[in-house]
Structure formats: C-alpha cells, structure tokens
Length: 297
Image (cartoon, rainbow, N blue to C red):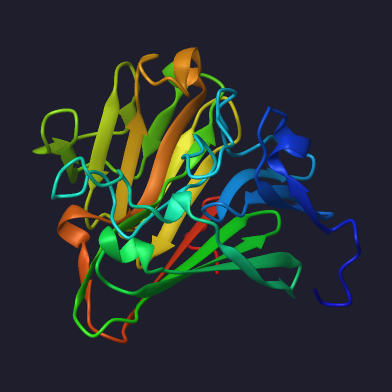
C-alpha cells in the first residue's frame, strides 16, 4: 500500500462487520473525503458506493447471503466469462463463475483524488471444466465523487475464446413507480421476458411489471432518474446496455424489496459478444456519475 494512504482510508474488513449476518466474506473498505465504498474479494464485487454527503448509489439486498461460492444479490457483480444463461443449457452457472470466485487485491493506488483498487483473477484447472479456455481478468475501481470501473479480460489459451460479460449494476431507487431510464429511446432491444423477441423502444422506459431488456450496440449514455439524484451511466468497450427489475417478489434473496432497485448495466452480450484471439485482451470502461457529461475517464 502506498505510504501516502492513512490507515483509515483503506482497510481490510468483512461483510459481517459492515453489513451483519451469520456468515462473512473478506472485504476492503475505502473511506476518503470524497466517498465511502466496500468491495467483496469474492467476485471483486463492489457492494457499496456513497459520495460523502450524498445518498448510497448502489442497492444491496437486505436478504443477501454472504457465503463462499454463493452469488451476492446487489452492488455490482461481474458476470463473466459469459452473460446470462449459457447457450449449452442450465447445467452451467448463470452469468458465469467469476462472481463466485475469490479475486486477489493486487494494487492499491491513487490517481489524482481517486483511490484505486485493482483486483485480479486467473482461471484455474477446475474452471476448465466449465470454460475450456485459460484467461486472466482484472477490474480496477476508481473511487472519488464518481465511480469508474475498468475491466480487462485476456485470452491466455492457444485457441480463440468466446466472451460476453456485464458489469451488473444494481442502483438504489426511492420509488420504482417513479423511476425512468432515458437515453434508450428509438433503440432496438431483445426482450428476455419474451424469449429474446426483438422490439423497438419508442420512449424512455418506466417500470410497472418485470423488465428484462438487452440493448446491443447502444453505447452512449443512459440516465436513471427518480426522486434521488440522477445516475448517468456511460461506457467504452461495453456497448450493450441491460435493464432489469423482476417486478415481483419471486426471488428468495430479493423478496418484497424488488421496488428498491433497478439494474442498469453495461457489457457485451448477444449481438455484441466477442471472440478473443489467443493472447488478445478486451478492455472496457464504465463510469457512473450524478452529472450528465458523458464518459468519465
């Protein structure tokens, strides 16, 4: 850890110490003059981000389970090396396996006023049973008064590697009924509630029932608004936008809390999915801010 970090800025902790519960996972907590954040080492998953003096930006389910090898509901899970249901069927884990693995915190640094945490995961022999390509993934969080995620995936194998992913952001909302997503009007989408039928989004999206829409090739910037401050999401190398809310209490680790969040994600999926040549790397950047100014870099 660089010498200019005080012991209070970056600390080792556990999910139990921060969020409570009977089980606990290793975490790193960041507290600066600009923000507070918590990252779980399992999945290198950002669980909380709150600008100082502001509201919590991310939603973490009150029913979330912090158990080794189990998905954590909320924050920003990293869904890779595939997004959604694997094309071979339900025998493989939905959204890949990297969110279920322990990542290594390899760098703690500072860029300007931002604290930067970089995590790394290298696939193992056991992973080859699920995904027969060796790869390395890195995620860097730049934490200041806004949030920047820099994700890279490198094919370490000798054959071309299929790749899709999502930075699966759960954003806290004050009222689902008063929430809307802008920046998607006149875009084409795949509707996952209707067997991926294609549709055309004619206006901003509002919520009254389950929404599970994938917008390949959208790019640009999307705006989430409700009674809380707006969230602006932009990206590079992650032109797929995914918007999801279950619309009911059918999920055990969501329950009646489904009206407290909206997922507005960026990644590459379906039409945007890639094939990485041996030795090649895919890089993506997603930024979240409360001011509409395009990509924060």
